[in-house]
Structure formats: structure tokens, C-alpha cells
Amino acid sequence: MDLLSSGNAPFLIALFLLLFIGVLETLAVFLGASLSSHFDAAIDSHPDITLGENVFAHGLSWLHIGRLPLLVIIVLFLGGFSLSGLILQWLAGGELPVWLAVIVAFIVAVFSVRWCGRGIARYLPRDESSAVSTDSFVGRMAIMTGATATAGSPAEARLTDEHGRTHYILIEPDEVDVAFVRGAKVLVTARISGSRFSGSANPWPDLL
Image (cartoon, rainbow, N blue to C red):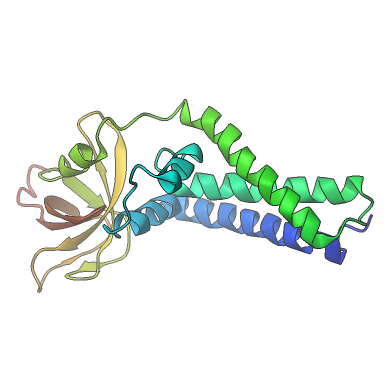
């Protein structure tokens, strides 16, 4: 079977996208940022997205959405989809219709997120209450890791909670004429929404 045949196109695209995400995340780590934090912050910035007691909410829970970082879920899905599709076409000698292979690979990918995600989730700390944990960031010192932040244009910052765990948040100055550059220490003063906060320049530069 020719690996570059048209029947493998959807699965090769998914595989290349998976590799592309891996390269971006590696570069982000070297630059002191986190691609995963931006994915999760994008969801947190929409307060209208709520998980009620309904079929949709149970489906998200079944896929560990909210328990695992969104980037991990995307990687698991792309990996399951691309590998299962390529293997399926190889077993069928490349003669399986693309639409049928895509459907089967999609189902396998969903279950790979469920099964593999369950194993990964066991080793991740559970948030007893994400709202309380997020609110507890106020009053803590954060270090800017992203680009320059200005009022209305937040950038990424890193802070450590009371349990010694590292978190990445989006923060902006609470004053219009102030800017936070990379490496600056910022006092978190208020939570705007989700993982977005406002802050002020370090009031104790001689101590911290």
C-alpha cells in the first residue's frame, strides 16, 4: 500500500498536525510559555460556557474535558485518529473507501481519548474547587512570561499557588499608562474572568 495514496490523506493530515503541535509546544516551553495554557485560557475566557446536568455535559465529562488540559485531549484524538486510520487502510490494502475509514478512525479516536485520558488523569492533581483555587491567585506575585501586557491586552504570566503548583494566567495592568514586560514581577490584584487577571507593578521591588 502506498503511504501517500489519497485514501491516507485525512490520516496523514492529522499526523502532520500532531507533529506541528508538538513542535509548537516545544518552542513555547523554550520561550517560557505554554501552548496548553492558552487553549485552556481561551475556554475560561467565555463565561457563557457552562456544564449543566445534561447529556452534553456528561459527554464532555466522559472525554475528560475539564479534567485534562485541552491540548492533551487534542493530541490523544489526533494520535488515535491518524494511527487507527493508517493501520486500517494498511490492513485493507488501501482499498477501503475514505469516508468509511474516516468514520471508523473517528470512533477509535474518541475511545482512545477516553481510555488513554483515564490513565493520564490518574497522575494529575485534582482541583477540589477550581473557582476557589483561581480566586486564591489574587494577592500573589506572578512573573511575566509572555509578550508585553497593557491595559486591555493581557499577556501570559506564571505564578505558584499555596501548594507549590505552577499556573499560567493572562494578566494585564490595572492602570492605563502601565505596561508589564517579560520577566517583570506583578502583584495580582483582581480576577477579571476565567484565567484573566489584572495586576500592579511589584510594590516591594527591594524585597521580591
